[in-house]
Image (cartoon, rainbow, N blue to C red):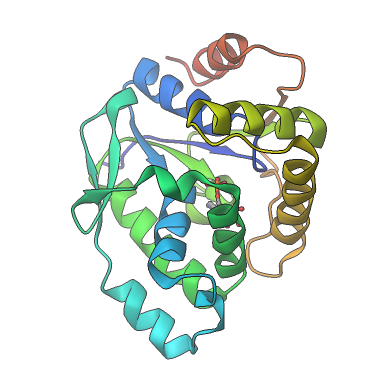
Amino acid sequence: KAHRIVTIDGPAGAGKTSVSRRAAGLLGLAYLDTGAMFRALALRLGPEGHELPEAELDARLGAMVFSLAGSGADTTLLVDGAPLPDAARTEQVGAMASNLAVLPVVRRRLRLAQQALGRAADLLAEGRDMGTVVFPEAGRKFFLDASPEVRAARRVGQLAALGRPADYAEILRAIRRRDDQDRNRAASPLVPAADALVIDTSLLTEDAVVARIVEAAGG
Ligand code: C5P
């Protein structure tokens, strides 16, 4: 029997991660943070990683083992058995991940890993291309959006909570740059799937967004 898949896509800072985790718990699905897979690769390869030869990227990715531990809101993504360090959550690592994410060899390897996880469990999969490319057959698809200013302000708040105070103007610039790169790349650009429910979260509380998703996904 095919596993149940719900997808949530959207740009950086739209509030996807905490919303997705909570919705997964309420819907009884494992939570897959696919951005964390790109971030794990970025941490492993360093800032020049996207300049490595394609064959080497393919080999490095082929050797990485992704798995999920726990369930629902408490699902943890493990890479070679270890969770992602907090250092992976910085905007610098996000930018490195975005540089890697334009490369077809990287997208292909991670797509295969994501689809394998989707064959092993009922999933709420969160990322940029979950509804369009990785799980086009998903039963329910969402696209969360918000203005760049709102997203930058949220990001500053999240980083402060991690003990990493950040400059709003700098974060806004970084978010715009990463958006541009994610939306305009040839391989799997960030766009809502034709059958996705688009939710603008700019003026909604996190609770309200979670409630809309759970209601529409039939939890
Ligand atoms: O969502 P998060 O900010 O953690 O993602 C980091 C970067 O990884 C994104 O800016 C994007 O370039 C890339 N990504 C992607 N496809 C996904 C998830 C993330 O291209 N499904």
